[in-house]
Length: 171
Image 1 (tube, rainbow, N blue to C red):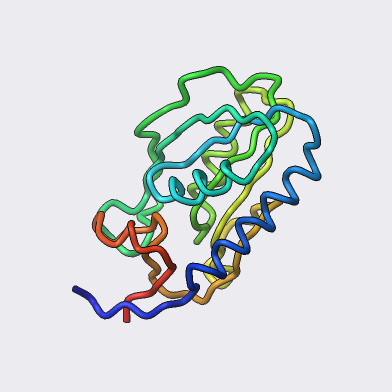
Image 2: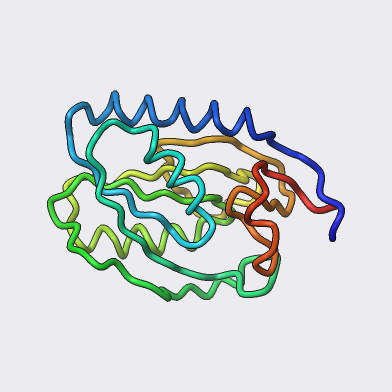
């Protein structure tokens, strides 16, 4: 096992997810929402966030990849799993685990906008501002983090460490 250091502990994560949930409920009071969970990394974040929201939520899943087995994005983006239901005319929040360069999200948001949702907002747990190459508007942000390779709470290294209850980094 790699030497993993804690970056964001479980309690801090929980409190931030609660804070984001409260902001979403304030912004969408009484409205039905569609959450699009970007697989696989944001599944824990999406599940925890959805449990804290009082609005009715439709869950959709999409899988896009640009990393493969690397720790740095390849820049080649592909959709491996598409939405099952139509999002036209719906209030949609895209839930992502981490934004690095921004290329994958730029591609994905453009793709989702073409499906004509009523609103389309982005909720990101972790952001690496120093790595950003594309300007992306994040409406709901958990944490800005340093440029470290992070694992846990859904994030992985070659499919390992997703189930850690905290965000850690590999030295």
